[in-house]
Length: 98
Image 1 (cartoon, rainbow, N blue to C red):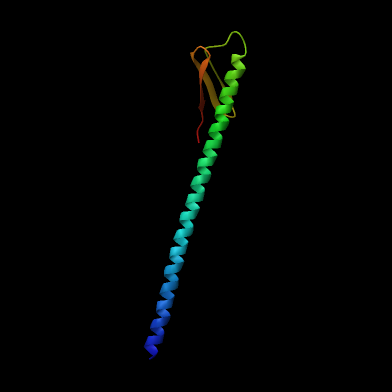
Image 2: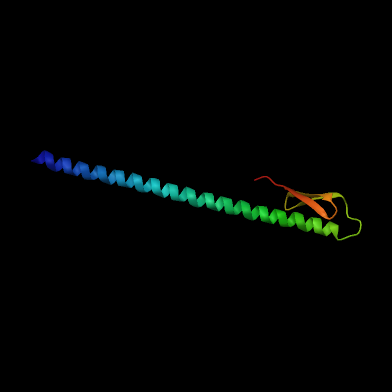
């Protein structure tokens, strides 16, 4: 009769161990999902800021009658440049290292 009591205790301990491993794996997956979303949002925000800076720099140079065909500068430790592709149309480029 005593061997059966020890066997039940072992089964309960094993079930507890399995449940704790499963719960920890689920929590790790949720944290990875949250961090991936955070990184994506941070990159999108940085890209929007860079695009705004580049377009603002292009607009600053376009406001004169003698608009240069291309120009470049450094803003926020990033290289910002623009090139004229056709009349009134410019391509802006931001070089940034993540």
